[in-house]
Image (tube, rainbow, N blue to C red; front, top):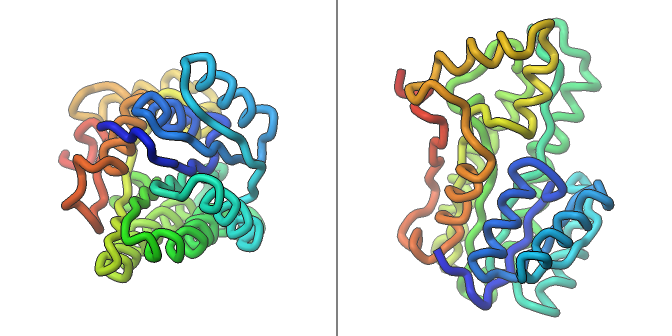
Length: 253
C-alpha cells in the first residue's frame, strides 16, 4: 500500500482514528495534510510524523465551514496536488433514546458528521475530477449499517455517510475518482472511549461489547487506519462505492 509522491488530506487528525490514519499514510510515503479544530493536537500529529521521517503539514479546519474547507483544499492542490481525501472528523453524543436527545445535540452531530463529509467531497472533487484521478475514503460506522440503541443521531448520520459515499462513487467514477467508506466497530480509543465512559462501570460496558464481536475483542486504531490506507491506495483501484466493515465480525452475528 504505497502512496509515494501522493498528497493525502485527513480531517480530524489530531486524535483517534484520524491521527492513526495520518501516521499510516505518511509511513506509506504520502505527504499528509493534517487538519483539525484542535490546533495543538494537530501540530503534535505532524511532529510525530516528522519524527518518524514522514512528511506532513497542519491546517486548522472546522469541517462544518464549507468555505474554509474549499480554501484549504485549493491551497493544498495548488502547492502539492490532492490525491487522497479522508473524511474522518466526527462526533458522537450522550447515549439517550431518540425522544430524549436534545435537538441541539442532534443537530451538532448532523452538522459535523454529515455536512462535514459533504463539504469535504464538494471541496475536493473539482480538483480530483480535473486531474482524472483521486481516492476519497469516508469514515462511517458499524452503527450506520446496523443501528445502535440510544445512538440514534450518530447512527442516522453515519448511515447517511454510507449512502452518500455510493452517490459520490457513481458521480465521480467516470472522471476516474473513487469513493469508499470504512465502517469501524468500537475501537480502543477515540469516540468509543467517550461512549464507554458514559456508563457507571466503563469496563463492564466494554466487556459486554467485546462479547458481541466474533473475535471477542475491540478493534485497534491502527487496524482501522490500515483499512483506510488500503482503500486510498492503488491496490484498491477497482473498488468504489463500497462500505468496508472493519468490525471484528460483529455485523455477521
